[in-house]
Image 1 (cartoon, rainbow, N blue to C red):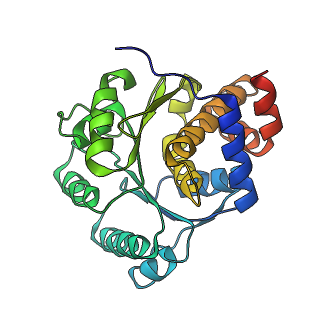
Image 2 (cartoon, rainbow, N blue to C red; image 1 turned 180 degrees about the vertical axis):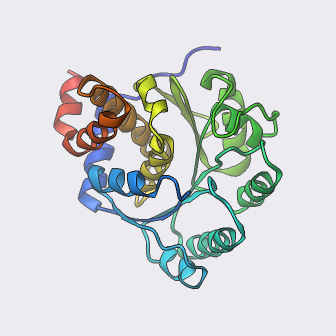
Length: 267
């Protein structure tokens, strides 16, 4: 199998420029461990986060947002009810929503929830290799939230999942692969230190959601989100001493990355 092409810097630049011009409102229903870094990452990149979690408000707000994130990391009945209502309202309003299937395939409750969500037309799905393999029905191999498989091993499963759901699927790892089932991009940026900071993957899923807002090319938008996170991860690592300072350097990198810098990298 040939290696998918790398997403061009000019595409990343165009998508980042579009996001910052639109400043999309992102409704975030994410796990409770990562809410702060998720909100800060969205603000740094140029989006507007809102964590509306009450069942009484989730549907009303989802319909007003530019995009919705559903992250099942800390799933429990009240949060699940709010997620169901938010997804239904988002679909009715034409708001794209992104699924982060945290630890799917490892535990039955969350796996059943994700199976139901797959029938609700997600615009994008972002997971590690083990999560994508499990979600596509190719077997569970994860260890909690951690993947025990490389991203390349899940590429075929991601392509199948994209074709069966209509979603753009991003399988992330040392190299990220983003596919709509027909066309696939690779984004080879990032650093292993990103796996030593809680919430970088969940923050990436929120960036994916933000980039899908008001886009004319969902595949490029999702791929650009992965690229931006990876490029900023590399830059943050070069400016930090370890996981603690990486967190702050990563947010700074998201804030200062410019479309002009990205276009210059393609020259």
